[in-house]
Image (cartoon, rainbow, N blue to C red):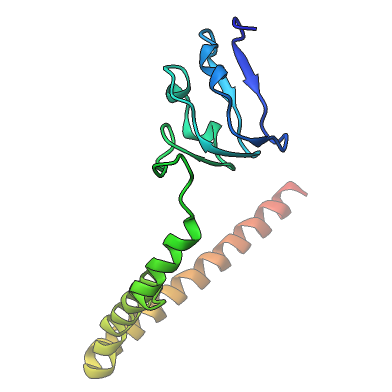
Length: 155
């Protein structure tokens, strides 16, 4: 048993803590305990800390290689309490949405505002749009004409 090289217990609904005896597996180079119901501190051993955090995801585990630190008695801190504390400090404001809305308003009025204020810019912009529309229509017409001529040439 001590010469095991790979263990994959992912998604098996295992419960409890990871046993300390797993640190005795010296040849272990692949371990996947993700998406179970494991909880507590990951046993410290040279092997276990070298695995990726994704090998332990989906559990209530703490200590390296995970970024979540354990409390003094080895329990996992409650994420919901931390989230509630953050929301209370921010008064429920989602700053990502505020910044996106602010950028949209500034960008929109930074472009459209001058068109309302300066009539020559508005005329130049509409002239540019007309030119683009004309070139688009003419390229579609030429493309249809070329396709029609090539089909007539083949027959």
